Length: 293
Length: 293
Image (cartoon, rainbow over all chains, first blue to last red; front, side):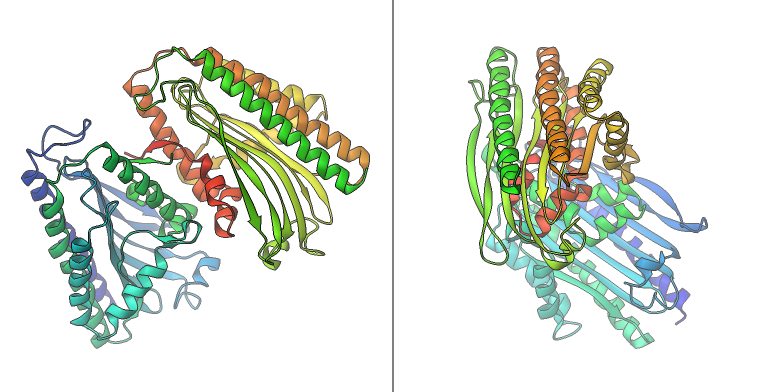
């Protein structure tokens, strides 16, 4: 398989997954049509609106681009699902920190990134992101983690179980490594607590040959499938549960914590903002409403 | 004047200024007693509540502490006024970046820090912070900047004029240098815009001898007096102006930008959070409610 074939296959998968997530989330909006919604929610079930953007490399050359998908609905207060495929040349100081880029700063990256903030405080927020990177090396990375303001054991258990099954089908150590990596990545030192109740986080699943590419690509697809299998199930389980002002306040304060993590610690967010990434796409992860009080 | 006398004088000033700010802001709460307020505002005019905290130096030794002052009122949706006086030893890598600390990493710092988020979108938010630092060198730093969601020329003009007068009384170049420094400090690259409409930002006003200490201390006091003179005037001018949902939404979105700046770029916030500072005191600057939608 040539590198171009790998890139095309990965990009096509992320787009396919995006399309299916759009459909699954819009179906949840339809199912929630008659549920109580926020005062400022739309009258009709939400639908994704897309916006494409193009990137110019710092060298001045075309650098790819992406499509933002944003839905503000009744079940989903705000959900962003972005895909992007970009290429170009890393700045020298950044290249030094990326596997395989010190030798040659050219890169290619394709991926999907999703953050859902839900109207009902009983429904957990969620983050999912998977990507394929190419420098002189190439690798997959990503993860998915659940972010309930009001954690429920059953939801955490099922979310973990779905990701564990995806991991276990591909490597006996994946779950152990990647679930711990998730815990450590989403630890917020200044709050001395985790953001969320975990899931998996992985990176640098290198693909030196076709067998490794196939295995890691299959694992990355399995992560996407696991997400698509379990998250709508959890939404369906919780979206009709009643909530009160106190629960909404707990949600808004939890979202403050979520925004803090993303803006202070999240590598992708901080790097993207400081290096001229597409701010609208990067910041689509921020909550529609948050409180620090 | 011994260094201990300088430290004591600076600390006493910041405490005195804090007391007068408490009084001035509580008076505004009294004056606004009968104005329309937010649905979740208290029934009575707000009053500052204080909470003291102590700091343990990374060496394990006592490291000073501070007092947070927080008021959630009807005019002031959330205002934090903190004073602190801390001392200890900088970590080596940080010491290397601080004037006079490479030679000896011990430090002393005393200061006041204020952020006010106002209920009425017509009233600008404001930030003010001044401090006295001692390593093998010693210096004053600080500033004040206005953050209206709905900028008004008259308010910007008067706020700038008050700070310019304080600057001009102390050094012919202070206003020019420090107002530009403010513009550049509060520029948000990823939004390609400023946070706020400016004011002043200054640092490293070194005090190698008594004359320099007296001059820079007098300037720092003048900045505090200028703030105390002009900000309540602007609040009084605007606090009875009616507003609608659209203005409130503009305010909440502006606060999203404000939070972004503080969490991604503000040196004090990011450094404080990443080095075990008092997270509650540091994050008192975050808005009570914000939107990214």
